[in-house]
Length: 429
Image (cartoon, rainbow, N blue to C red):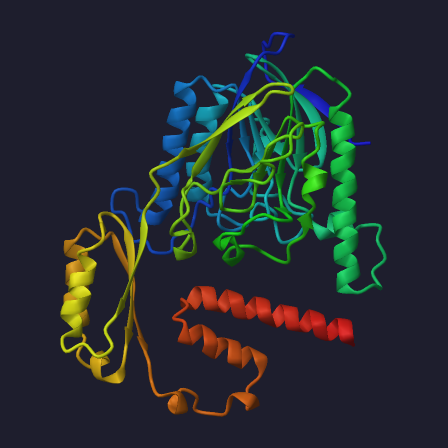
């Protein structure tokens, strides 16, 4: 049975009413791609983007007298954030904690490389920061808010070494993955059983892992290690009133059609990581939590716009002017911009990149991420060697290059492909 921890929070009434909950996740402070140095703060402008989104969210929550804050994991980009990033996050958690209880869930980016070391957010527990509870374990506990009591279940990122401590080691990778999923499902069921001991109290589960059926964003590029996925049926348990998820950057409700079951909500990230999230709205979730009658609303924030401009200039007599004309179709104010040009060898030689850069900045672009040219050549000259003599990884590398996939993303895809190939080879062996 999952233990029920001590109550946190002060001066609550015994009778609960509607509880106003702020749910957010995947802040990733320290993400610096597509940024430049801000002379006022000494930090990357992209770091400040993520910090400002937190400020915007906190202003919204305090204006509406929030009762409870749930952070569903991944405070920083890396597992070993520098002190400046820790300070900026702590300032904002303190602002929230002065107003209401705050639950900080441990995500995969908060876990140290060695499980015996402290996580990047464990310090809040060590210092016994008032009104802050760090969800490091699979646990169920009560929190008292100014509007009533809430039963909270915390399901941090599934760490293989912990969930498989008593499992046999002499099994294959596929079997270990199945065992990890089974253990995760068992823990979640035990937590729901513990939460159900008080039938009248509203209850909320917060987790940081992948749920089968979720639509992934570009978080694959920032995931650390192999992932495990839980089934939706295990999470969408009617013994919960709301499931506050983190880990996947795309906001979504995985349980929109099943009555009698709780909303299973990924809040999504507060800022865009890269162009893989170009069209995704960013924000947080405002929840009105009641036993058997929970409502929620996604609240978008003013995240940094990312804009891709695609233009085909093959056969154009003045390809540069065609590109400049295309730029006029877009609002580039404060945006991170990339221009993806399809050309042939003849038009490639006529493109004036400096004029394109000047026009993008004139139109208000914050950062020019890339001006990429996909030069279409005759099929016979596209490969310098026959494809059949290349390895799968070499073929994938050339394919990604032909599609103008950015270097960082291509490296992640290639690394993942190599890991999958090793897994298959080991299983077959």
